[in-house]
Amino acid sequence: MRIDVISIFPEYLAALELSLIGKARQDGLLDVHVHNLRDFTLDRHRTVDDTPYGGGAGMVMKPEPWAQALESVAGDRRPVLIVPSPAGTVFNQAMAHELAAESHLVFACGRYEGIDERVIEWAGESFDVRPVSLGDYVLNGGEVAVLAIVEAVGRLLPGVVGNPESLVEESHANGLLEYPVYTKPSSWRERDVPEVLLSGNHGRIASFRRHEQFRRTASRRPDLLEGLAAATLEPADLTVLGELGYDVVGGVLAHRYRSAEL
Ligand code: ADE
Image (tube, rainbow, N blue to C red; front, side, top):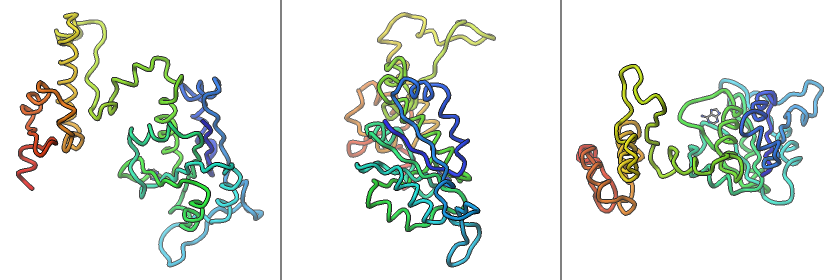
């Protein structure tokens, strides 16, 4: 996979040289190029921003440096252009899988109040443009979002994570949060590892872990359970979910009290 990142703080992206992503680059699995937007400016001051039309606080990124920078990375196919923005679609594991199937991702890191909207429209002629948000909070720019997205996508590429099994059991892999994990010693500061995990009974361990996934998801992320298709669940799952307050209504999970409130 080829990745181009355009930013006025290319130093921010040095973290992409570390750890698994750095190793994937060394192994030739990821080809990452970071570009300084200021190299595409046309004036002596290397200006990238200006005041907003219509007034208001802050500065807006000028269109022409972006057009020059994007043209320099476009290639002949239609790459995906990810524009990190708090006004984007919220990033999740499903989107990470979708992006992992692409051969070329380009990231446009905005700063200030954002990039002149005409750039986003114009880019649609040669890119598949996707405004993407990390979540419902505001960062100072897109760089941190790029680090997060490249890490989430990069680790899904074949060969990047040593043991691909670890991708199967983790949080969000099956729409649920991951079960809790424990290691030695089995007794630590008067706290014991759940007995079932020491039993060697693989069936009991699997159902314990699955039930812990439901408990944890119900308490921390009830939004992930609401509307989950019951067809993906086993009878034993429905018993645990029933204890947690979930019924099947019209083929999907619904919380008893929350749906009664509606
Ligand atoms: N830039 C500023 N805030 C952001 C967010 N929440 N997600 C992605 N990019 C951003």
